[in-house]
Image 1 (cartoon, rainbow, N blue to C red):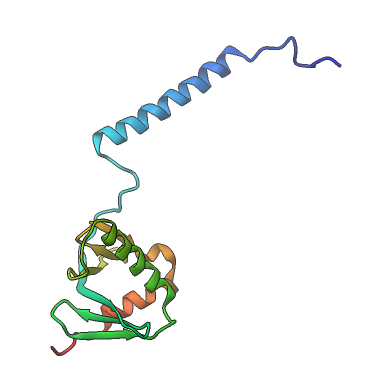
Image 2: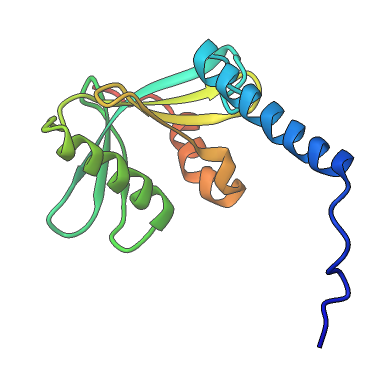
Length: 151
């Protein structure tokens, strides 16, 4: 059986166009990497509200959330708020990898563009929570909206 495309070659214009597209994509990626400009960087926005919070695991499985100054903000019951626990677990594991302790509070921030982030100043890791949907970000927004505790 013979190949129907045996005597046909690819047009030179198509090959040159494909090669040019590859070179252009590589040049753009190199420029972005070397110049420090990034299309994935979060847009700049002003801080609307921020809280420094400590998260402590209790023996019964609850998570105790306190202000950095020591006042109780909330106790998360055992077996609830799986997303909140997962985010905290990821941040805590990063601290463990860097041999950092748990005494430095995390920073929960609401931005002027509607984003909500949780930042670990020890590891400089930022989690933009709104990317996970409104039901997952709601417990963090509730922490921002809860009144300041009496210390």
